[in-house]
Length: 464
Ligand SMILES: Cc1cc2nc3c(=O)[nH]c(=O)nc-3n(C[C@H](O)[C@H](O)[C@H](O)COP(=O)(O)OP(=O)(O)OC[C@H]3O[C@@H](n4cnc5c(N)ncnc54)[C@H](O)[C@@H]3O)c2cc1C
Ligand SMILES: NC(=O)c1ccc[n+]([C@@H]2O[C@H](COP(=O)([O-])OP(=O)(O)OC[C@H]3O[C@@H](n4cnc5c(N)ncnc54)[C@H](O)[C@@H]3O)[C@@H](O)[C@H]2O)c1
Image (cartoon, rainbow, N blue to C red; front, side, top):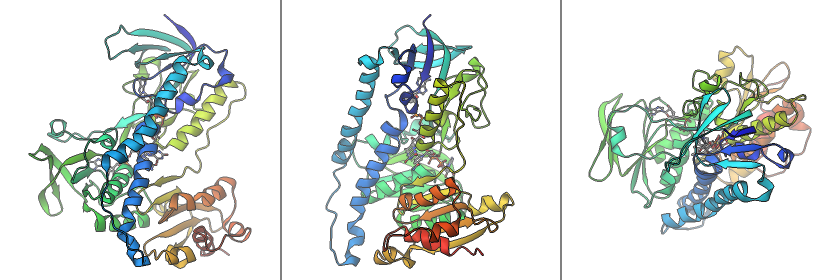
């Protein structure tokens, strides 16, 4: 039975651990799918490439108010798709070849199969092509096996034929209509992509608002704007999914009683779940929390000495920048077991690349209230700063929460153009403890640039 110093399960963020500093470690890496993991192959990167194409396609619809008449004459879906994956697929393959064959990696054995723990620090790797399974052991493991889409238990769904984010970007034809089940990140991003390409989009959500984990004001504004672009059905229970002659139908129950929505294609976007169960982490003594995330300490170590975990398998954030941070922490702690460092999850931001963009860091107003934190808020519309006014933006805003005693920022929430970039100085201020007043007046803000939104939101905080 081969024994290693270190085995890494998963080649998403886990693949970045091995570098020349591990040259004298006997290591193995196990991957059951495509090298590079979710973000590269079916997550952040392709979705944002589709979003960029969607933004280009959506421009003519709004250009005439600026005196520029443009017309969208067509979207060549296969060309859009093939340009994106024609750039991504070679990166995944190059990564695989590098680990499997390059002399830099002569200390690395690549197992292209599915790992499952069968005992203490004992992993069985099985192969889809019927090759006999192998069992490997190691002193240390890194669990970086990510997560997968949740498929809700809806009668008929399994036989209906549905897509998830894993498959919908590889469709052969652009459908004329799509129904998206879910109202979170993935639903918001794909609704924007498909609607911009001229597809009729219906969004079916269980709760009463889209992006409901955002600050209530942002969620309400996004829900209102989404309803102008898509057919949005909120507070709906999906009682049955059915195949139809041309696609799929969902039978719903909602505030107005029973109804049916039909479309060519169904996208299920109802959340993701960690792969800790399929990896059977319990067999090696690793524990999981309520939602299946592997439990780790501040050093990213599980309850088993020498077994670390990172990214979606252990992180409730399920974001790539968090997985990258945790990967750096695990890498350091493997290399320097006597000087371990802690992961920093104090101010984790996120952005939703829909239209308008949404970005957020820190506490929402609801969370501040629920935690009994004392706070003041401010609001600044894009329309009230020069660049937003020039763009004739009428719906975007920034909302800040700050501690009235210290002026420290507690939360920042932005909906509007370039929100994912505009929020960055606020993340910086929170991370380094810069108070709102010093931040607003202790530096220049380029005029007339979009960050003036932040400057004005800071100045609007009712602080002494
Ligand atoms: C559609 C979509 C869009 C996203 N967009 C963004 C975004 O814009 N910004 C952002 O920050 N985050 C985004 N995310 C989230 C981001 O992709 C994840 O947080 C990140 O990829 C997690 O990285 P990871 O290394 O933990 O896991 P992964 O990248 O999922 O890697 C896990 C790897 O382990 C392999 N594996 C699993 N089980 C086993 C096993 N038993 N044996 C062997 N191998 C196994 C898998 O095949 C996979 O390759 C998006 C996610 C999705 C689905
Ligand atoms: N821009 C980004 O950073 C980005 C983009 C995409 C995905 N992601 C990551 O991927 C994760 C998964 O995304 P997601 O959108 O699938 O999950 P999510 O948790 O954001 O949203 C799930 C949505 O599905 C709804 N839902 C759940 N069960 C339902 C049902 N039976 N019927 C109808 N609606 C139902 C929920 O109310 C919620 O609105 C995110 O949490 C995020 O971490 C990030």
